Length: 123
Image (cartoon, rainbow, N blue to C red; front, side, top):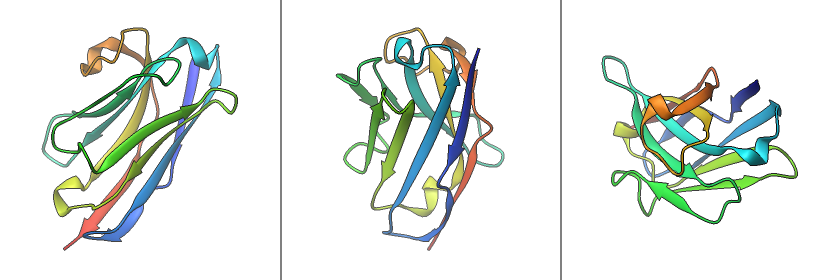
């Protein structure tokens, strides 16, 4: 089992920045690829970003490329999502996930999920 807890969400104006963190505990964190997903009200869960087990490779949704950065610190069992130039359409509940598939953007490929943290971007 891997337990994931997100933090860092909140309310920010358009153009602002937020940094989300995901703390992991349980089984060996470094053995898992990590991903961030988001879900807005009335919409399906959407892939945001993924990072390989050693942090050497990343994958981003086109909608966040150049604005968001995913990173991880295996010594601290932590993965972060730095979000810059935020837009109102980025408003959603953001969740981190752990899985064995390499940089996948499919929610079904992730085994463990956090509860999520709300991000609200005002115009």
